[in-house]
Length: 167
Image 1: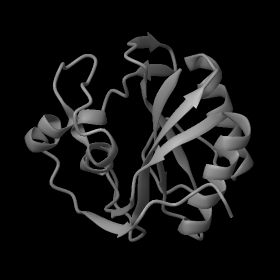
Image 2: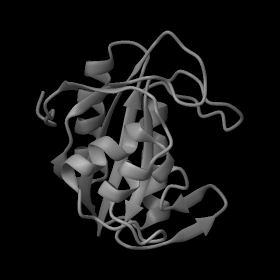
Image 3: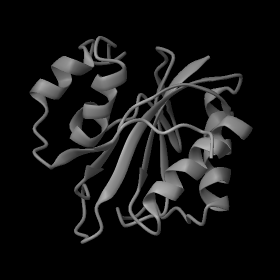
Image 4: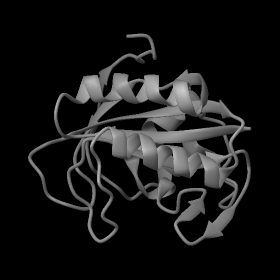
């Protein structure tokens, strides 16, 4: 099965964090088929002087959505993240399942497509880079259209070209 993951980091050595997460995803989740460029972005939903590095991965995995989420939580924990569902805050790593095939899932702790995907420029800009004609399975609009309609005005600046999982 194929999925899109959103990756973000704003604590520690952000580039090293992204490299490490790529390696861990390939080791424990599946093959990385495409990687967007890395974008530097303003924090979304909270104030912080530490801007994020964000990117999107397109992966192939044998895991079901719940298993994929479980592995993501393990990777985040191994990298030092403790999830706190109460507030947005700075974090060493954040991995979100944005899309899983064309499925829609609404379970406690797991909503696919990600419920705020279409409201965040830091997700839509890299998504449009690697999947511009992809269609949101609920809104039935292309990601390019969703980016044009997006009300979010936060800064999303190209940081560098795609990374690879090879250190």
